[in-house]
Image (tube, rainbow, N blue to C red; front, side, top):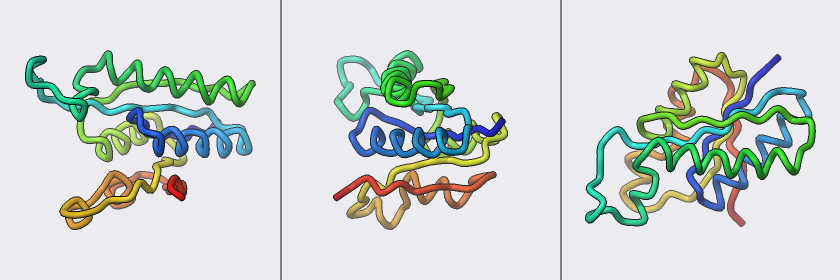
Length: 141
């Protein structure tokens, strides 16, 4: 049985990528693993911002669970699991794919602007380091 890994972070583009991953998994009769990364550093609650929303394993697991339930409901019969992985999103997806022997990683193509375009993005990180094929889902208009 093959496994497809998709990364989510609560954003609409990640949710769209997960929907694409579910369609691919259904078509290939593969299992789907929904993964949300969380940082390995702590952010004091008083200093936390919306950008720090996924600072704990529990929050990341909840984000992955919500998306896993959504795609599972939309694709009855699809085996959908979820997990949270510490680290930067691209690195976390690659680590999970290696550990699970995944056949495919699906990521969204969220637009990257400014300095992030020079430094890279999740899709770029995954493409450079993936142990398997990578599918970049079209997630913006």
